[in-house]
View (cartoon, each protein chain N blue to C red):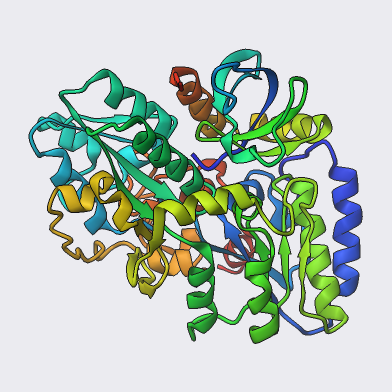
Length: 375
Length: 90
Ligand code: SF4
Protein backbone atom coordinates (compact mmCIF):
# COMPACT_ATOMS: atom_id res chain seq x y z
CA UNK A 1 0.00 0.00 0.00
CA UNK A 2 1.14 3.50 -0.81
CA UNK A 3 0.03 6.43 1.26
CA UNK A 4 0.15 8.99 -1.47
CA UNK A 5 -1.10 12.03 0.33
CA UNK A 6 -0.54 11.92 4.04
CA UNK A 7 -3.15 13.85 5.93
CA UNK A 8 -3.39 14.92 9.51
CA UNK A 9 -5.07 11.78 10.72
CA UNK A 10 -3.17 9.23 8.68
CA UNK A 11 -2.55 7.26 11.86
CA UNK A 12 -6.26 6.99 12.65
CA UNK A 13 -6.92 6.19 9.00
CA UNK A 14 -4.56 3.24 9.18
CA UNK A 15 -6.29 1.97 12.28
CA UNK A 16 -9.65 2.16 10.53
CA UNK A 17 -8.15 0.52 7.49
CA UNK A 18 -7.13 -2.45 9.65
CA UNK A 19 -10.62 -2.69 11.17
CA UNK A 20 -12.18 -2.63 7.69
CA UNK A 21 -9.83 -5.33 6.44
CA UNK A 22 -10.72 -7.54 9.39
CA UNK A 23 -14.39 -7.41 8.34
CA UNK A 24 -13.80 -8.66 4.78
CA UNK A 25 -15.07 -12.15 4.08
CA UNK A 26 -12.35 -14.12 2.32
CA UNK A 27 -13.01 -14.41 -1.41
CA UNK A 28 -15.79 -11.82 -1.44
CA UNK A 29 -15.60 -8.68 -3.56
CA UNK A 30 -17.36 -5.55 -2.32
CA UNK A 31 -18.63 -2.64 -4.39
CA UNK A 32 -19.60 0.48 -2.52
CA UNK A 33 -21.04 3.48 -4.33
CA UNK A 34 -20.40 7.00 -3.10
CA UNK A 35 -23.35 8.93 -4.43
CA UNK A 36 -21.98 12.42 -3.90
CA UNK A 37 -19.40 14.19 -6.05
CA UNK A 38 -17.90 15.80 -2.94
CA UNK A 39 -17.03 12.33 -1.66
CA UNK A 40 -15.44 11.43 -5.00
CA UNK A 41 -13.31 14.54 -4.64
CA UNK A 42 -12.09 13.58 -1.15
CA UNK A 43 -11.44 9.98 -2.20
CA UNK A 44 -9.14 10.99 -5.06
CA UNK A 45 -7.55 13.90 -3.28
CA UNK A 46 -6.46 11.76 -0.37
CA UNK A 47 -5.94 8.54 -2.26
CA UNK A 48 -8.39 6.83 0.08
CA UNK A 49 -8.63 3.75 -2.11
CA UNK A 50 -5.09 2.99 -1.02
CA UNK A 51 -6.31 2.70 2.55
CA UNK A 52 -8.84 0.03 1.63
CA UNK A 53 -8.21 -3.66 1.11
CA UNK A 54 -8.22 -4.74 -2.51
CA UNK A 55 -11.53 -6.55 -2.21
CA UNK A 56 -13.34 -3.23 -1.73
CA UNK A 57 -13.99 -1.07 -4.78
CA UNK A 58 -15.45 2.39 -4.45
CA UNK A 59 -17.62 3.24 -7.43
CA UNK A 60 -18.57 6.78 -8.19
CA UNK A 61 -22.21 7.67 -8.46
CA UNK A 62 -24.34 10.26 -10.18
CA UNK A 63 -24.20 12.88 -7.43
CA UNK A 64 -22.56 15.71 -9.30
CA UNK A 65 -25.38 18.00 -10.44
CA UNK A 66 -23.34 19.58 -13.22
CA UNK A 67 -22.43 16.17 -14.60
CA UNK A 68 -26.00 14.95 -15.01
CA UNK A 69 -27.28 17.91 -17.05
CA UNK A 70 -27.89 16.63 -20.58
CA UNK A 71 -26.67 18.54 -23.60
CA UNK A 72 -30.19 19.43 -24.68
CA UNK A 73 -30.70 21.52 -21.55
CA UNK A 74 -27.58 23.57 -22.32
CA UNK A 75 -28.90 24.14 -25.84
CA UNK A 76 -32.26 25.16 -24.36
CA UNK A 77 -30.52 27.61 -22.01
CA UNK A 78 -28.64 29.17 -24.90
CA UNK A 79 -31.89 29.38 -26.82
CA UNK A 80 -33.40 31.40 -23.95
CA UNK A 81 -30.26 33.55 -23.62
CA UNK A 82 -30.56 34.53 -27.29
CA UNK A 83 -33.99 36.08 -26.81
CA UNK A 84 -34.03 39.89 -26.81
CA UNK A 85 -33.24 41.60 -23.53
CA UNK A 86 -32.27 38.40 -21.72
CA UNK A 87 -29.46 38.28 -19.19
CA UNK A 88 -28.92 34.75 -18.04
CA UNK A 89 -27.13 33.82 -14.84
CA UNK A 90 -25.84 30.50 -13.55
CA UNK A 91 -23.20 29.02 -11.29
CA UNK A 92 -19.59 29.20 -12.48
CA UNK A 93 -19.42 25.44 -12.97
CA UNK A 94 -22.04 25.63 -15.71
CA UNK A 95 -20.07 27.98 -17.95
CA UNK A 96 -17.90 25.30 -19.51
CA UNK A 97 -20.46 22.53 -19.86
CA UNK A 98 -20.62 21.74 -23.56
CA UNK A 99 -23.89 21.98 -25.47
CA UNK A 100 -24.19 20.69 -29.00
CA UNK A 101 -22.95 24.01 -30.42
CA UNK A 102 -20.51 25.02 -27.69
CA UNK A 103 -20.67 26.19 -24.10
CA UNK A 104 -21.85 29.43 -22.47
CA UNK A 105 -18.55 31.20 -23.13
CA UNK A 106 -18.79 30.31 -26.83
CA UNK A 107 -22.36 31.52 -26.82
CA UNK A 108 -21.33 34.83 -25.22
CA UNK A 109 -18.72 35.29 -27.93
CA UNK A 110 -21.65 35.21 -30.33
CA UNK A 111 -23.55 37.88 -28.44
CA UNK A 112 -25.48 36.33 -25.53
CA UNK A 113 -25.12 37.70 -22.02
CA UNK A 114 -24.64 34.74 -19.66
CA UNK A 115 -22.99 35.62 -16.37
CA UNK A 116 -21.88 33.56 -13.44
CA UNK A 117 -23.26 34.28 -10.01
CA UNK A 118 -22.52 32.82 -6.60
CA UNK A 119 -26.11 32.71 -5.40
CA UNK A 120 -29.60 32.87 -6.93
CA UNK A 121 -30.02 35.93 -4.70
CA UNK A 122 -27.28 37.66 -6.71
CA UNK A 123 -29.42 37.00 -9.76
CA UNK A 124 -32.41 38.55 -8.05
CA UNK A 125 -30.37 41.62 -7.25
CA UNK A 126 -29.28 41.98 -10.88
CA UNK A 127 -32.97 41.82 -11.86
CA UNK A 128 -33.86 44.54 -9.33
CA UNK A 129 -31.10 46.81 -10.57
CA UNK A 130 -31.83 46.27 -14.25
CA UNK A 131 -35.59 46.58 -14.67
CA UNK A 132 -35.28 46.66 -18.47
CA UNK A 133 -33.48 43.32 -18.68
CA UNK A 134 -35.16 39.97 -18.42
CA UNK A 135 -33.02 38.11 -15.92
CA UNK A 136 -33.17 34.31 -16.09
CA UNK A 137 -31.45 32.19 -13.45
CA UNK A 138 -30.44 28.77 -14.73
CA UNK A 139 -30.99 26.69 -11.62
CA UNK A 140 -29.21 23.38 -11.23
CA UNK A 141 -28.49 21.13 -8.31
CA UNK A 142 -29.87 18.49 -6.00
CA UNK A 143 -31.79 19.17 -2.80
CA UNK A 144 -28.79 21.05 -1.45
CA UNK A 145 -29.47 23.86 -3.90
CA UNK A 146 -33.19 23.68 -4.63
CA UNK A 147 -34.17 25.31 -1.29
CA UNK A 148 -32.05 28.33 -2.24
CA UNK A 149 -33.84 28.66 -5.56
CA UNK A 150 -37.16 28.17 -3.77
CA UNK A 151 -36.41 30.91 -1.22
CA UNK A 152 -35.33 33.21 -4.06
CA UNK A 153 -38.60 32.59 -5.91
CA UNK A 154 -40.63 33.29 -2.77
CA UNK A 155 -38.73 36.54 -2.33
CA UNK A 156 -39.18 37.54 -5.99
CA UNK A 157 -42.92 37.01 -5.69
CA UNK A 158 -43.13 38.91 -2.40
CA UNK A 159 -41.32 41.83 -4.03
CA UNK A 160 -43.53 41.63 -7.12
CA UNK A 161 -40.53 41.52 -9.48
CA UNK A 162 -41.65 41.04 -13.06
CA UNK A 163 -38.33 40.67 -14.86
CA UNK A 164 -36.94 37.65 -13.01
CA UNK A 165 -37.45 34.02 -13.91
CA UNK A 166 -35.92 30.62 -13.26
CA UNK A 167 -34.94 27.98 -15.82
CA UNK A 168 -35.38 25.08 -13.45
CA UNK A 169 -33.12 22.04 -13.74
CA UNK A 170 -33.26 20.85 -10.16
CA UNK A 171 -32.98 17.10 -9.79
CA UNK A 172 -33.73 14.78 -6.89
CA UNK A 173 -31.26 12.22 -5.70
CA UNK A 174 -33.49 9.32 -4.64
CA UNK A 175 -34.92 8.38 -8.10
CA UNK A 176 -31.38 8.39 -9.51
CA UNK A 177 -30.24 5.94 -6.84
CA UNK A 178 -33.28 3.82 -7.58
CA UNK A 179 -32.49 3.84 -11.32
CA UNK A 180 -29.00 2.61 -10.53
CA UNK A 181 -30.33 -0.09 -8.21
CA UNK A 182 -32.69 -1.24 -10.95
CA UNK A 183 -30.05 -1.23 -13.67
CA UNK A 184 -28.64 -4.64 -14.46
CA UNK A 185 -25.14 -3.27 -15.14
CA UNK A 186 -23.94 -3.08 -11.62
CA UNK A 187 -24.15 -5.10 -8.46
CA UNK A 188 -23.58 -2.90 -5.45
CA UNK A 189 -23.15 -3.90 -1.82
CA UNK A 190 -23.96 -0.59 -0.20
CA UNK A 191 -24.02 3.18 -0.44
CA UNK A 192 -22.25 6.11 1.11
CA UNK A 193 -25.14 8.57 1.31
CA UNK A 194 -24.60 12.21 0.35
CA UNK A 195 -23.80 14.58 3.22
CA UNK A 196 -25.13 17.98 2.26
CA UNK A 197 -28.20 16.77 0.36
CA UNK A 198 -29.15 14.92 3.51
CA UNK A 199 -29.04 18.08 5.65
CA UNK A 200 -32.15 19.00 3.64
CA UNK A 201 -33.92 15.68 3.00
CA UNK A 202 -32.71 13.86 6.11
CA UNK A 203 -32.05 10.11 6.24
CA UNK A 204 -35.54 8.67 5.89
CA UNK A 205 -35.73 8.86 2.07
CA UNK A 206 -32.97 6.23 1.90
CA UNK A 207 -34.88 3.70 3.98
CA UNK A 208 -36.30 1.99 0.86
CA UNK A 209 -32.76 1.05 -0.18
CA UNK A 210 -32.30 -0.96 2.99
CA UNK A 211 -35.88 -2.21 3.14
CA UNK A 212 -36.64 -3.05 -0.50
CA UNK A 213 -33.16 -3.77 -1.84
CA UNK A 214 -31.48 -5.10 1.27
CA UNK A 215 -28.49 -2.77 0.92
CA UNK A 216 -27.01 -0.72 3.76
CA UNK A 217 -26.65 3.05 3.49
CA UNK A 218 -24.36 5.23 5.59
CA UNK A 219 -24.78 9.00 5.27
CA UNK A 220 -21.19 10.26 5.30
CA UNK A 221 -19.27 13.45 5.98
CA UNK A 222 -16.61 14.82 3.68
CA UNK A 223 -13.34 14.43 5.49
CA UNK A 224 -11.07 11.48 4.80
CA UNK A 225 -11.78 9.93 8.19
CA UNK A 226 -15.54 10.39 7.74
CA UNK A 227 -15.39 8.35 4.59
CA UNK A 228 -13.24 5.59 6.05
CA UNK A 229 -15.42 5.51 9.16
CA UNK A 230 -18.50 5.22 6.93
CA UNK A 231 -16.97 2.40 4.90
CA UNK A 232 -16.26 0.68 8.21
CA UNK A 233 -19.91 1.10 9.30
CA UNK A 234 -21.10 -0.33 5.97
CA UNK A 235 -18.74 -3.28 6.20
CA UNK A 236 -19.87 -3.93 9.77
CA UNK A 237 -23.49 -4.05 8.63
CA UNK A 238 -22.59 -6.42 5.79
CA UNK A 239 -20.61 -8.66 8.14
CA UNK A 240 -23.52 -8.78 10.56
CA UNK A 241 -26.05 -9.35 7.80
CA UNK A 242 -27.86 -6.08 8.52
CA UNK A 243 -29.20 -3.53 6.02
CA UNK A 244 -30.03 -0.22 7.66
CA UNK A 245 -29.63 3.49 7.19
CA UNK A 246 -26.96 4.86 9.50
CA UNK A 247 -25.96 8.49 9.94
CA UNK A 248 -22.21 8.91 10.29
CA UNK A 249 -22.57 12.68 9.73
CA UNK A 250 -25.08 13.27 12.54
CA UNK A 251 -23.06 16.26 13.71
CA UNK A 252 -24.43 18.10 10.65
CA UNK A 253 -27.27 15.98 9.22
CA UNK A 254 -30.52 15.82 11.24
CA UNK A 255 -32.38 12.53 10.77
CA UNK A 256 -35.50 14.37 9.58
CA UNK A 257 -33.71 16.95 7.44
CA UNK A 258 -34.61 20.63 7.34
CA UNK A 259 -38.41 21.15 7.38
CA UNK A 260 -38.17 24.85 6.43
CA UNK A 261 -36.16 23.97 3.33
CA UNK A 262 -38.48 21.12 2.36
CA UNK A 263 -41.48 23.41 2.80
CA UNK A 264 -39.93 26.09 0.56
CA UNK A 265 -39.35 23.49 -2.17
CA UNK A 266 -42.93 22.19 -1.88
CA UNK A 267 -44.40 25.68 -2.05
CA UNK A 268 -42.60 26.60 -5.25
CA UNK A 269 -41.87 23.37 -7.14
CA UNK A 270 -43.43 20.07 -8.05
CA UNK A 271 -42.09 16.86 -9.54
CA UNK A 272 -41.86 16.59 -13.31
CA UNK A 273 -43.28 13.41 -14.80
CA UNK A 274 -39.82 12.62 -16.14
CA UNK A 275 -36.47 14.28 -16.83
CA UNK A 276 -33.49 13.35 -18.94
CA UNK A 277 -30.24 12.70 -17.09
CA UNK A 278 -26.98 12.65 -18.91
CA UNK A 279 -25.94 9.09 -19.41
CA UNK A 280 -28.81 7.68 -17.35
CA UNK A 281 -31.57 8.57 -19.83
CA UNK A 282 -35.11 9.51 -18.80
CA UNK A 283 -35.94 8.88 -15.15
CA UNK A 284 -39.51 9.35 -13.96
CA UNK A 285 -40.25 11.81 -11.17
CA UNK A 286 -36.59 12.71 -10.88
CA UNK A 287 -36.62 16.48 -11.31
CA UNK A 288 -38.54 19.58 -10.30
CA UNK A 289 -40.43 22.21 -12.26
CA UNK A 290 -42.10 25.36 -10.97
CA UNK A 291 -45.67 25.15 -9.71
CA UNK A 292 -48.46 26.85 -11.65
CA UNK A 293 -48.59 29.56 -8.97
CA UNK A 294 -45.10 30.50 -10.11
CA UNK A 295 -45.81 30.31 -13.86
CA UNK A 296 -44.91 34.01 -14.16
CA UNK A 297 -41.41 33.14 -12.92
CA UNK A 298 -40.95 30.02 -15.04
CA UNK A 299 -38.54 30.60 -17.92
CA UNK A 300 -39.76 27.43 -19.60
CA UNK A 301 -43.22 28.94 -19.86
CA UNK A 302 -42.18 32.53 -20.59
CA UNK A 303 -39.78 31.65 -23.38
CA UNK A 304 -40.69 28.75 -25.57
CA UNK A 305 -37.98 26.21 -25.02
CA UNK A 306 -37.35 23.82 -27.90
CA UNK A 307 -36.70 20.92 -25.52
CA UNK A 308 -34.72 19.02 -28.09
CA UNK A 309 -32.94 15.87 -27.16
CA UNK A 310 -29.32 15.81 -28.18
CA UNK A 311 -27.42 12.57 -28.12
CA UNK A 312 -24.19 12.70 -26.14
CA UNK A 313 -21.03 12.82 -28.26
CA UNK A 314 -20.00 9.37 -29.42
CA UNK A 315 -16.62 9.50 -27.72
CA UNK A 316 -18.17 10.37 -24.37
CA UNK A 317 -18.65 7.63 -21.81
CA UNK A 318 -19.96 9.82 -19.00
CA UNK A 319 -23.05 7.66 -18.74
CA UNK A 320 -20.97 4.67 -17.75
CA UNK A 321 -18.87 6.79 -15.40
CA UNK A 322 -21.99 8.25 -13.75
CA UNK A 323 -23.42 4.80 -13.22
CA UNK A 324 -20.12 3.62 -11.80
CA UNK A 325 -19.70 1.00 -14.54
CA UNK A 326 -16.48 2.55 -15.82
CA UNK A 327 -13.67 4.22 -13.94
CA UNK A 328 -12.81 7.63 -15.41
CA UNK A 329 -9.48 6.47 -16.81
CA UNK A 330 -11.21 3.68 -18.69
CA UNK A 331 -12.92 6.19 -21.00
CA UNK A 332 -11.10 6.25 -24.33
CA UNK A 333 -10.73 10.03 -24.48
CA UNK A 334 -9.81 10.54 -20.82
CA UNK A 335 -6.84 12.84 -20.47
CA UNK A 336 -6.26 13.01 -24.23
CA UNK A 337 -9.15 14.61 -26.10
CA UNK A 338 -11.04 15.21 -22.84
CA UNK A 339 -9.36 17.35 -20.17
CA UNK A 340 -10.67 20.02 -17.76
CA UNK A 341 -9.56 22.68 -20.27
CA UNK A 342 -11.34 21.04 -23.19
CA UNK A 343 -14.01 18.83 -21.66
CA UNK A 344 -16.00 16.56 -23.95
CA UNK A 345 -18.22 15.23 -21.21
CA UNK A 346 -19.66 16.91 -18.13
CA UNK A 347 -17.79 14.68 -15.66
CA UNK A 348 -14.65 16.56 -16.65
CA UNK A 349 -16.13 20.02 -16.06
CA UNK A 350 -17.09 20.30 -12.43
CA UNK A 351 -14.40 19.69 -9.81
CA UNK A 352 -16.85 17.24 -8.22
CA UNK A 353 -17.06 15.28 -11.46
CA UNK A 354 -15.34 11.91 -11.23
CA UNK A 355 -13.20 12.52 -14.33
CA UNK A 356 -12.07 15.99 -13.24
CA UNK A 357 -11.32 14.82 -9.71
CA UNK A 358 -9.34 11.92 -11.03
CA UNK A 359 -7.52 14.05 -13.60
CA UNK A 360 -6.70 16.87 -11.17
CA UNK A 361 -5.24 14.62 -8.55
CA UNK A 362 -3.47 12.36 -11.03
CA UNK A 363 -4.53 9.28 -9.16
CA UNK A 364 -3.48 5.90 -10.31
CA UNK A 365 -6.02 3.51 -8.98
CA UNK A 366 -4.96 0.17 -7.62
CA UNK A 367 -6.46 -1.57 -10.63
CA UNK A 368 -4.44 0.57 -12.95
CA UNK A 369 -1.27 0.03 -11.02
CA UNK A 370 -1.93 -3.69 -11.08
CA UNK A 371 -2.68 -3.71 -14.79
CA UNK A 372 0.38 -1.66 -15.53
CA UNK A 373 2.52 -4.08 -13.59
CA UNK A 374 1.01 -7.01 -15.49
CA UNK A 375 1.52 -5.40 -18.90
CA UNK B 1 -21.18 25.17 -6.21
CA UNK B 2 -21.49 21.99 -4.24
CA UNK B 3 -19.22 22.99 -1.40
CA UNK B 4 -20.55 23.91 2.01
CA UNK B 5 -18.48 26.73 3.47
CA UNK B 6 -18.41 27.42 7.21
CA UNK B 7 -18.96 30.95 8.51
CA UNK B 8 -19.38 32.62 11.89
CA UNK B 9 -22.48 34.72 12.42
CA UNK B 10 -21.50 38.29 13.40
CA UNK B 11 -24.84 40.06 13.53
CA UNK B 12 -28.44 39.60 12.45
CA UNK B 13 -29.99 42.36 10.36
CA UNK B 14 -32.59 44.38 12.30
CA UNK B 15 -34.97 45.09 9.43
CA UNK B 16 -34.42 41.73 7.74
CA UNK B 17 -34.16 38.93 10.30
CA UNK B 18 -33.54 36.47 7.46
CA UNK B 19 -30.20 38.13 6.70
CA UNK B 20 -27.00 37.96 8.74
CA UNK B 21 -23.50 39.36 8.52
CA UNK B 22 -21.23 36.37 8.52
CA UNK B 23 -17.44 36.12 8.68
CA UNK B 24 -16.17 33.64 6.11
CA UNK B 25 -12.43 33.05 6.08
CA UNK B 26 -11.86 36.54 7.49
CA UNK B 27 -14.20 38.46 5.18
CA UNK B 28 -17.69 39.65 6.05
CA UNK B 29 -20.56 38.84 3.73
CA UNK B 30 -24.33 38.95 3.95
CA UNK B 31 -25.83 35.47 4.06
CA UNK B 32 -29.50 34.47 4.01
CA UNK B 33 -30.42 32.51 7.14
CA UNK B 34 -34.09 32.02 6.23
CA UNK B 35 -33.71 28.23 5.98
CA UNK B 36 -32.82 28.11 9.69
CA UNK B 37 -36.01 29.97 10.69
CA UNK B 38 -37.02 27.13 13.05
CA UNK B 39 -33.90 27.68 15.15
CA UNK B 40 -32.19 30.87 14.02
CA UNK B 41 -28.48 31.23 14.73
CA UNK B 42 -27.26 33.95 17.06
CA UNK B 43 -24.01 35.92 16.79
CA UNK B 44 -21.07 33.69 17.64
CA UNK B 45 -22.67 30.56 16.20
CA UNK B 46 -21.33 28.81 13.11
CA UNK B 47 -23.25 27.90 9.98
CA UNK B 48 -22.61 25.91 6.82
CA UNK B 49 -23.19 28.13 3.78
CA UNK B 50 -24.29 26.91 0.39
CA UNK B 51 -24.87 29.31 -2.53
CA UNK B 52 -25.57 32.22 -0.19
CA UNK B 53 -27.88 30.39 2.21
CA UNK B 54 -27.14 28.89 5.60
CA UNK B 55 -28.05 25.22 5.29
CA UNK B 56 -27.39 24.09 8.85
CA UNK B 57 -25.82 25.13 12.11
CA UNK B 58 -22.52 23.52 13.00
CA UNK B 59 -20.27 23.73 16.02
CA UNK B 60 -16.96 25.50 16.04
CA UNK B 61 -14.97 22.30 15.92
CA UNK B 62 -16.87 21.08 12.87
CA UNK B 63 -16.34 24.49 11.25
CA UNK B 64 -12.59 24.23 11.78
CA UNK B 65 -12.51 20.71 10.36
CA UNK B 66 -14.63 21.72 7.36
CA UNK B 67 -12.32 24.64 6.66
CA UNK B 68 -9.26 22.47 6.85
CA UNK B 69 -10.88 20.06 4.42
CA UNK B 70 -11.79 22.85 2.01
CA UNK B 71 -8.30 24.29 2.09
CA UNK B 72 -6.93 20.86 1.27
CA UNK B 73 -8.92 20.56 -1.95
CA UNK B 74 -7.34 23.64 -3.49
CA UNK B 75 -8.75 25.13 -6.64
CA UNK B 76 -12.40 24.20 -6.27
CA UNK B 77 -12.43 26.02 -2.92
CA UNK B 78 -10.54 29.03 -4.28
CA UNK B 79 -13.07 29.35 -7.09
CA UNK B 80 -15.94 29.08 -4.65
CA UNK B 81 -14.45 31.73 -2.35
CA UNK B 82 -13.77 34.03 -5.32
CA UNK B 83 -17.42 33.69 -6.34
CA UNK B 84 -18.55 34.33 -2.77
CA UNK B 85 -16.45 37.48 -2.57
CA UNK B 86 -18.20 38.82 -5.69
CA UNK B 87 -21.57 38.12 -4.11
CA UNK B 88 -23.66 41.02 -2.81
CA UNK B 89 -26.79 39.44 -1.43
CA UNK B 90 -29.51 41.65 -0.03
S1 SF4 C 1 -13.17 11.39 -19.86
FE1 SF4 C 1 -14.51 12.99 -20.66
S2 SF4 C 1 -15.78 11.98 -22.19
FE2 SF4 C 1 -14.82 10.36 -20.97
S3 SF4 C 1 -16.34 9.89 -19.38
FE3 SF4 C 1 -14.95 11.45 -18.54
S4 SF4 C 1 -15.92 13.41 -18.99
FE4 SF4 C 1 -16.95 11.86 -20.27
